[in-house]
Length: 283
Ligand SMILES: [Zn+2]
Image (cartoon, rainbow, N blue to C red; front, side, top):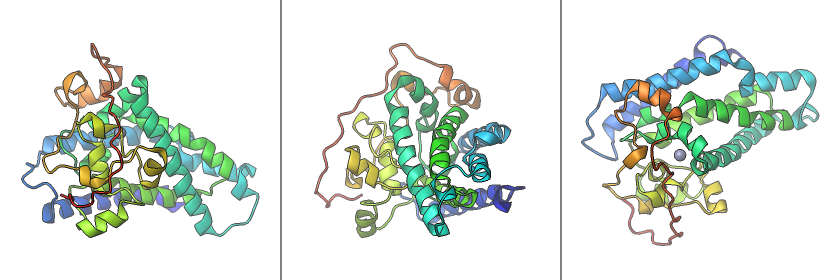
């Protein structure tokens, strides 16, 4: 697939990121956030760090797995004939459900949380936060996705469609913009919106372990981890506080963060917020 050869995929991801940054400048949700090029560079450096690590391990990628499954006839879709859109939709749904389970585990177990804490340590949430993942977390997610590739026999082209969907959604849900309140109410019942994901980046323990979905908010609603977007406060504080905070927020500290176990460290344990029907408080 040409998309993953050369730098086409990289150009696409950079184009999406640049568009998101322009949108943030034109129609920000939170106004007056000072642009810190140093922070943007730190977040981007984590993205490149992950890219290099995964680039060195191509057989661990879902794309490589799909090629192997295809060559050996492994999995459902390598045994039956199905339209391409069915395989692409199956890829998006299967990987999004897996991502929900992995994300929940990353928040539940401390040894996994130490790889995911890097992402939550960002004091602001904007499009560059979508790059700020520790490569260990990216590696965990890639390995956990592999059984779905082999069981379903997903074609490599469907993996590319999922990559495109993920790049768009991951950037969009971190972008410092807001949907119109009426649109937010409808869309957030099925999909993750910037408000829904912003709640997940809150420093407030009652929000941190909720809204774990990547593309669909349906998983959170099905499994009881959903916080509606009308709980988001205009002055919501983002990032980590206390011993879990990454200080100073430098590339070295981000890269080495999984090896840090601070005294009295613990994942803040929230009581999930109850579902509310109060739709009047959208910020
Ligand atoms: Zn998280």
